[in-house]
Picture 1 (cartoon, rainbow, N blue to C red):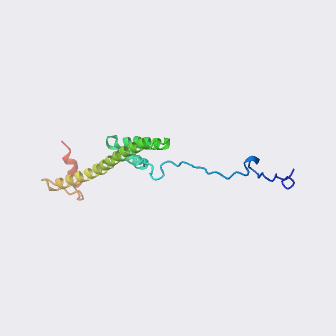
Picture 2 (picture 1 turned 60 degrees about the vertical axis):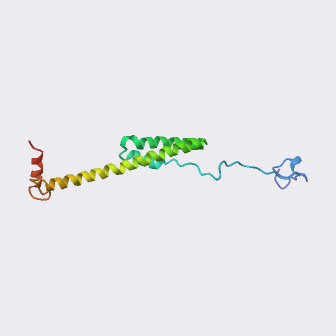
Picture 3 (picture 1 turned 180 degrees about the horizontal axis):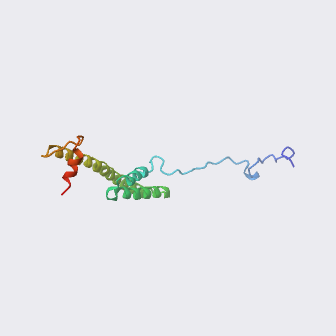
Length: 142
């Protein structure tokens, strides 16, 4: 039987029940959750960067743990716990980033102070001079 030869009853249409063909269409409500409130951030990329770079006192690793927890809780729909984990991850990332900037800065300052001290002390030597390396080695020989 092809579609052209089949006739529908006058009160029925395709994909509807014949009894409900005359009823008005209803409405469907879809609950989208908290529309006005944005879900918390998880800071996962920032935590990964802090974990892989210097990671002083495992602060970057702690940030990574809380970032993963925040992402898991956000996926499960527990936004309050996700927000708490997100806040902890944010502060661990701030602390880790501060240490990650402070340690190289301190190393550069100590290197500059060492060079200034060696340049101004008695028996100073020129790093760029001909006998600079030999004088540097004499400092550490017994």
